Length: 181
Image 1: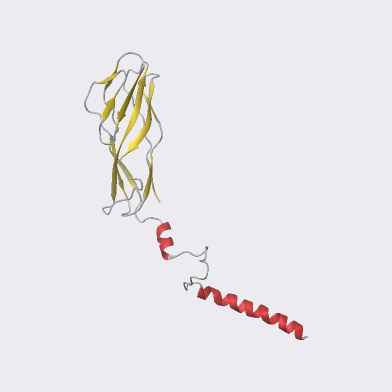
Image 2: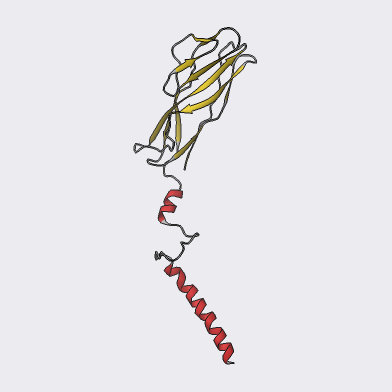
């Protein structure tokens, strides 16, 4: 009989210790590993739904302007986010108004965001013609963040390659995805 009572005592002691543990879990003890299931107020704040939803506004469209393609081969055209256009190969600029695209993002001040642009964009002209923007580049920093005024603006350009019979006016859509981190 004595053996049964002693065996029951450690179980009661462990059960009582388990009831006391949650009250002690808020105390910071360096010798105890942190609770992986617990979240701090900072974690809840970072993962909380933002108070201000993101809004993306296109201020100006990407426009490579007029380019005259002369002869055989290809003609790469690069337009930087700063508005500098570089032509090479069998092409000449027929206008001086090539413009990078400009975007204004509004959101919660101080929040980090991710901005995704497609790797390539297909542009379509009248009939069956199409050309392609090979890459898009922005002037965004490595880790973009909404400013203290609740805005983030950036400009973007790209690399366009003309070849063959590319006569006409071309248009396309660039999907810009912005989300909070």
